[in-house]
Structure formats: structure tokens, C-alpha cells
Amino acid sequence: MSPTSLMDVFFDGIRTAIAQMTWLEVFSVACGIVQVLLSRINKVSNYFFGILGILSGMYVYFDAKLYAEIALNMYYLIMSIYGWWFWMANKTAAEQPITRCNRQDWFKVIAIVLIAFAVLTIILHRVTDSDVPVWDAWVSATAWAGMWLLARRKLENWILLNISNLFAIPLYIHKDLYLFAALTTFLFIVAIFGYLKWQKIIQTQTTS
Image (cartoon, rainbow, N blue to C red; front, side, top):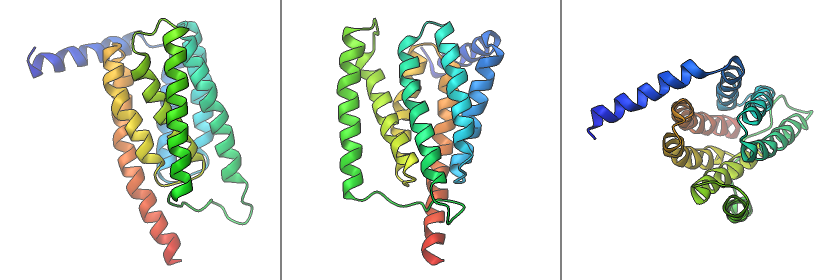
């Protein structure tokens, strides 16, 4: 199939997905976009929209009988609540300072990725009828580590989230979820600018 034909199939899929969307799906996606844009500029309110997007998305997943996705979103909900609490815990400043990962942080990140990847792969392989258990587990495991770093306001959260996004885009296309593939592509680009923005914030913190 030629590149032009592939693009035609991709955009036809997006148009079909948009035509079949419910208002709740639109609301969930919109909240996700607002959440990542607020994260990029280091605003604690990003978690409010993130939680709204997660809750509405879980309802959509339940209606579609995607029960494994509901379980994964429960983790995101817990991490979002934790992240909101962590960011608000410092009463002496309007915003928690952004920092870089140290060696201990990287050990924790590696542990999260490896443990989550192993557990999810086993569960998806033995308990569900997933035809991509390894692929799906890797996307989720790296995203989990990224969410933990985001909650800790570590610069490298954008790296882990974009590793997840990089593998999620072809996974969504494989599953004919073209709208989510397009959204993830957008989030991938935003995460790049988020990383650069947080770098500047760190430099400003150091200067001040």
C-alpha cells in the first residue's frame, strides 16, 4: 500500500471515529487535552481536569466493556489525586519546585516499569483475551512511571510519558482507534514542548 493510500485510510478512520463519538467521549478527550496543556505550564489545576477526564473515560470504557482499561484508569485516578495532594502540600509557595531525577529516582522508575510490565503482561495474557498483551503492558508500564514522576514534579516525566506515547500511537492504529492515535500524537508534541518549558522553569528557579 502506498504512503498516500495509508494516509487516506488513517484520515478515513479519524472521520469515522469522530462521527461515532458520544458527548462523553468528547468531554473526556477535551479534559485530557486541557490537563496536559496545564501540566506543560506547571499548573496544579491540571489534575482537576485530569480527574474529570479519567472519570468520564471510565464510564465510556464500561459502556464499551473495556474492563482492563477501567482498572488502568483507576491507577491514573489514584496517582492524580496523589499528585494534586503533593503539589498542594507546600503551603509556603504557590507552586512546588521542579527538579531533575537523581539516581534514587531512576532506580524507582526502573522498578516501576519492570514490575508493572511483568505484572500487566501476565494478567493480560492469562486473564484477558488481549491479542497484544506485551505491547499493551509496555505502554501502560512506561506511562505509570511517567505519572509518578509528574506527581513528584520531575522534569523527566515528559521523557517517560513520550516513550509511552511513541508506542501507543501505532498500538491505537493497530486497534483502529484512529482518534486516540491522533490525540496521542498531539500529546507527544505537547510533551516535547513541556520538557523544554520545564527546563526553562528549572533555570529560572536556579537563578532566583
